Image 1 (cartoon, one colour):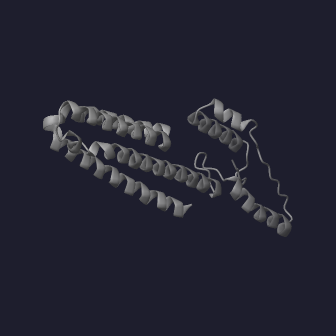
Image 2: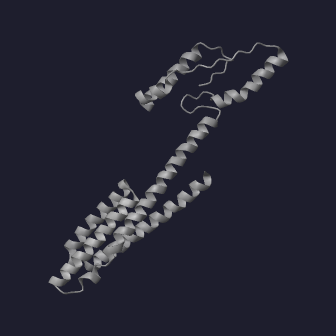
Image 3: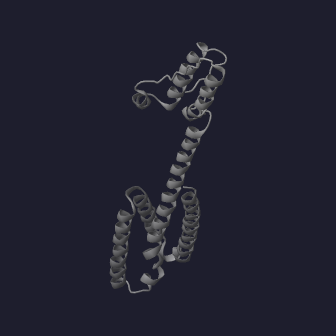
Length: 209
């Protein structure tokens, strides 16, 4: 998992650098042609942002298809414009044929790997809580720690012939409750239950959430 996280991290950085570099190239192209083609540049820029958003929300395949349709529309428009007004129109705006596609691909790649990093970080945090000795929400010992301490309880009973009793309190329909209340309300409920159990315990008892 750590290896995958490292790969996603540097891939996110690479896609980000490429995306910024392509934006810089797009800015240079627009600055070089704004005198004669300002309206077309603004129109194509708006279409490019729409293509990036479509690729982000609808996926790579949809984004590629829409970008190819945009390239085809540009070619048809350039041919039509060339027939009406012969000039070097198609050569000055050639960068619009490829840059929107590259911007869509790099932005999509950057966001995909960034989402993977967020998912892996959330899973790592969850694993740390599950494997740790204390629960971060209630500050109580976890079930994993309780199982590990069972050996201590058993040895105490065997060596000193002291009665040892363990009890596990389970909240029924916990998953259903999570879907009905917010995270803040659930945390408050857990703390309330923990405080109630603590009030009924002896000072040398160990509580596990």
